[in-house]
Length: 505
Image (tube, rainbow, N blue to C red; front, side):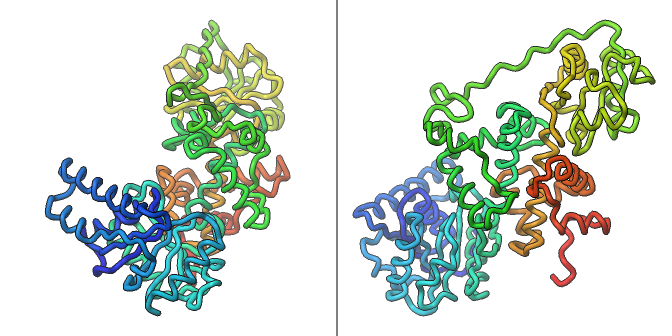
């Protein structure tokens, strides 16, 4: 593996994150000293890492010679004083500000003035830790994700007094170890957790408003948009007890910014111990570790001689007409003579769309135009859509075997709301200069596992559509959560890609 010049690195903390960091840098050719305050923990961590290397040799992923070299570079030490010759020390200890400050003060007394101190903190401001140090310019954040060897991204956090040379060196070391190093300002949630707020918070808000169930939200985002997991599956995996603290912390640290507002649905579930997989129940129940999903809604029979009107101004009208004809329905030119009226609004709800077109809302069903119609289809009902119109639309859109999700009225369906929120938060990150566009795009793709970086994804879906959705939601709800980022609005106005940097950068 290509690496930066060999460095002596210390890792304080021999837990899951600490030993992962030890493994990463030892494999990359660096000498790594591991220390933990718990007697014997460092030795166990080194033994564990050596075992991981041995397993890699067995699987043909590492040569025996490389294993032996890495083993020689692994050092367990019982005293912090053994780290005195390290050029970089990374702490991966408890998330307690005073404990970290005390450690850094002690390390400064042991290390040379040129040594770098890095914190693997995920929630504390790096500047708060550095404030306790004599040389805050030598302090930065270096935030890895679990499991460290497999999550190929790390955040290099530049605190307000961190020297540029320190940032460059950390980036060099991280990328030399095979990880993408993204540089981020010392802001709440740094870059990856910050960018990930949209998926969680908007998913929760959709359920909070009784638009759809958690399973509905997860199904649409996974199958129609390509997310690896929906927000409720992710919350169950990470643990709602952990995620709820992160959501509340970021909201408060951003001075209660409405875009990050947590949901009132969460505290009662945490109080009830519904944490997710680890407690056996969260948003889903788990039997022997297996998620128990609610049964799918049965597909109704398609009525004979169904008369269908498709809004001719809809962006996906041609596709809907083709589906209706293929299913055996009869297309009509007048909405008043149809059994079912199909609409395809962007950002608006079914009710307002029906009324604006002068239609009978009882016979109207809206179809989300955002995901391709070949994928899972989302049908939105007005409050007065009849059971006959509802079932006819379900049968019609499921006739070719494609899965269908039925939801209640909402400006923006599920996919539109979530994607517009994700793109808007990413645009605001870029506007604030928290990270470069390139680092933002890679961080989200590698750290969150999204199919694409958020700004590039917004371009592909249509930046003008994302802006249209946000403005419609803001008008419908009055909630400043949906106010569009200036970065987004300006680039749409100028006809530019959302990845276009500012002229001064």
